[in-house]
Amino acid sequence: MAGESKRIRGRETVRDMILSMLAVGVVVWIGYLFLPHDANSDPVHVVEYKVAAASAKRGAPYQLLSPDGLSSQWRATSVGYQPAANSNGKGNAWHLGFVTPSGQYAAVEQSDVPRDALLADKVAGGKPDGTSEVAGQTWERLQGEKSRALTVQTGGATTVLTGTASYEELAELAQALK
Image 1 (tube, rainbow, N blue to C red):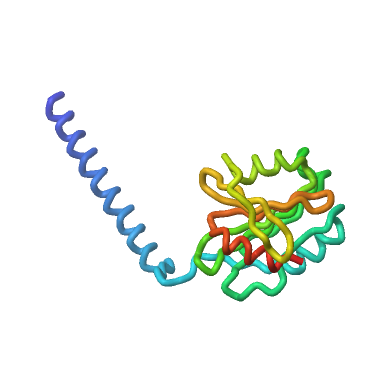
Image 2 (tube, one colour; image 1 turned 45 degrees about the horizontal axis):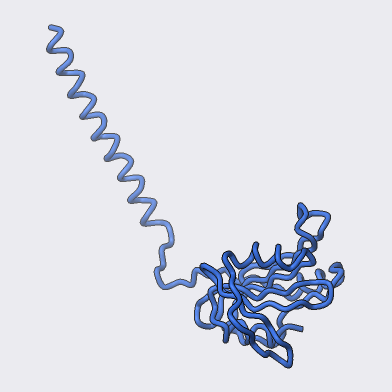
């Protein structure tokens, strides 16, 4: 009798597990049918940055730069200003991220922390890679492990244009900074 009860219990467990898996499968299938899954939709969430830039310019202790005149193919994806009081020792920090016309990432990073600290934070493994002349200003090029950057010291702040974008696209972003 003990052998029969183990055999029946084992069958019930396998049977119950199969029924449970079928029930979960049906729920997942119904969920898949009703959830949108358009493979052709654009996954980029565009944000408006001009109001945030105007507000940050009033509070920043340095000349905060944001682009003006970029084509609509430059899509802003992130924006933020962090005053020194709220940044855990990272100074006053301005960030504005974009998806470029070629589909790469480019960001404006500006802060009044020491230049070397900002570069180490924003361009991992950055090594000097020459210079670029943009609108009469010399920008230092850096090539990092996964990104590149253009950087310039402007008054009390360091401006870093960084990302996976080419130096040409970074220069186009630099040209638009006001």
